[in-house]
Each structure stands twice: as structure tokens, then as C-alpha cells.
Length: 299
Image (cartoon, rainbow, N blue to C red; front, side, top):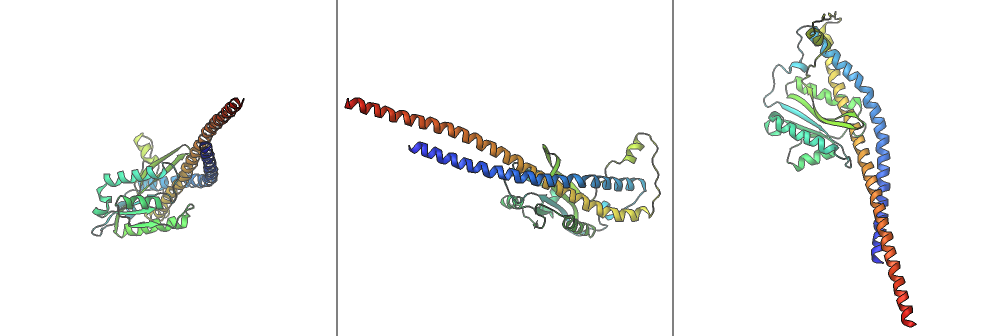
């Protein structure tokens, strides 16, 4: 009797867990749909803006800008800023672990980014802050103003502060460790170099290599003025896209994790129900045997 009572309690507990994880899965699915719409809506603009800036820099001749070349004079001890994007809550599968492993590998591969060498570590998310503190990695600042719905104003303000410090020579660069959203079935942890802006291969350079005619642009206003306007917007848009990708990756990771937990709970409940039925059947058989044996002894 005690065994069947214990199994019934476990069945009830597993059922409660299944209901909780199912609810969390539905919430994560709803948030994922909204975050995916935001991330996919901003990606074409970010890619087009970055492509425009790099093509402009490649075709307008030798133009220098502090966001590309860095400050003319750096202050002593100016190190690289590493921004790590994690979540505030757990139950997100391998999301936080993958980002934090990538961050630790980045710190090992780039000695200048380590706090002991002048590097600055900044974190978004309680999980990353707890992990780094546990591993004795000093965190310079924890950003708590973003939440599940980062706005362009807040992200732009952070990017502007990085640009101001970079131009002033207070920091030598900014790298962001985050999860990049590729599709609902694939998210990749990566390190994005935010500052200095790293030029990429452009159409103009590709056509020149292929022997095609290189396009000639007329700039109005001048190329330097256009870069001065477009480069800060490129940095802000790039950082905003990184935040959007991180948010949608977190939601899809939690959605998958909660679905796996729900399926595991249902399977465990099915097995426990089978064990309960077997235990109950054995108990009934034992009781019948005792009744028959008692009746036989009286007869």
C-alpha cells in the first residue's frame, strides 16, 4: 500500500511539472514569434547600411575616420571592452553555456581583453554575471536596462558611449560575445567586432578582382561628411541587431528546452502509471490470495 501511495504522489508531481513546462513553452513560443519578427525586420537594414558604408569607404579614396582607424592618441592602459550578452533567467537549454564558453575562449585567445592586461568586461544578464564572478573574472559593469525587449534608444545610447570612449582613446576596441540567430533550428555563438569597424568585401572590390569595370560615384556631400554621418549609425544598427539576435535566440532555446522537458515529464508519467498499475495488481492479487487462504482454513 505504501508503494502505490508513493507512486501516486510521484505521478501527481510529474503531472504538475509537465503543466508548468508546457505553460513556459507556450510563453516562450509567443515571445519567440514577436522577437523573430523584430530581428528579421531589422536585419536587411543593418546589412544594407553596413554594405553601403564599406562600399563608400572603398570607392571614395583614402578616407580616415576615428571609428575605423582608432583614436590618434590612446591613453595609457586603454584596453579592449568585451560585452557578453546572456539571459536573466535560466531554463534556456545550452544558450547561456554556449555564449559563456565562447566568451572564455575569446578572453584566452586575446590577452589584451583580459582584465589583468587592461581589458574591460561588461555583461548583460544575471546568468553571465554569476558565471564570471564564480570563475573570478572581474566584471566592470552589468547592464540591467535592456530586459527582454531592448529598444533602439537604449542600445544606441550604449553604442554612443562606446564610440565616445573609443574616439577619446579610453578604450582600444569593443567586441560583443552573443548568440547569432540563423534559423529556428540553428543559433551560433560568435564574437562580433563592434569597434574599430572592420571593412568587409564589397561589390566594388569583388568586381575589380573579377576584371569588371569599377563603378565611379559622385558624392554630395563629400565622402568624408557622409562617412561621419553614416558610421555612427552603422555602429548603433549593428549593436541593435546583435541584441535582437540574442533575444530571439534565447526564446527559441527556452522553447526547445521546455518542449523537451514536457515530453520527458509525459514519458515519466506514463512509466510511473504503468508501475502503479503493476503494483496495484500485485497488491490485489496478494489480498485475494489472503482471502482465499483464510476461507480455506475456516472450511
